[in-house]
Image 1 (cartoon, rainbow, N blue to C red):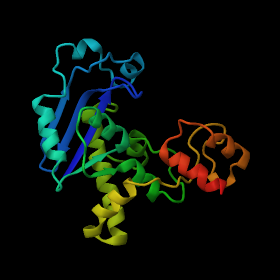
Image 2 (spheres, helix red, strand yellow):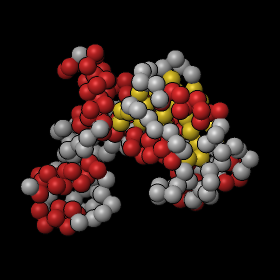
Image 3 (cartoon, one colour):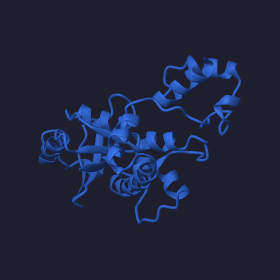
Image 4 (cartoon, rainbow, N blue to C red):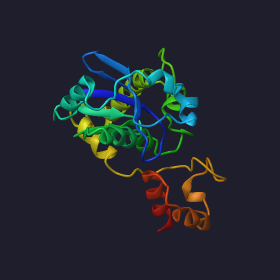
Length: 227
């Protein structure tokens, strides 16, 4: 069973924790709740998801809650697969709460992998929503709204991959792609934003390779084009 999941958090640093969790099961069951994190929500994060410290002040902590126990059971089941956009981030937030998903699929990596020609300028969930013309009533940057978009995006990706390898093999292929770095087609930030990596000067890529905070796919791609 696929479990479509999203978290909203206090921030994006190593110490940050979730303050909202939403997930949807294939059965149609939806869980969407706020939790009181062990540290304050940063204002930069409030500007994105609009969850304030006052809104979570009287909410329970996630760890140790009934919802925590239920999600542990779901994600420990080998029959279930966690689906998230930029799954490494959400899985990382769950791991801070003592939850270690056994299987996961990342729709961000899948979208990048399938766009080998670099036709899509950006791969954020909401950009893909409008670029691909996904029709759904859902609020952006809200955990519930995001899982509804996520589910529709996943369906599109599943259908596209099924054309090449058949539905029975798609799950394993999706998990395999999600577990490895993906080669990017275009640069998505900086002065060479939008350019194909093959056209970016080597000295710029060399400089970029020295940065410690590059995300996995970017570091892999920079290294590939420097060889």
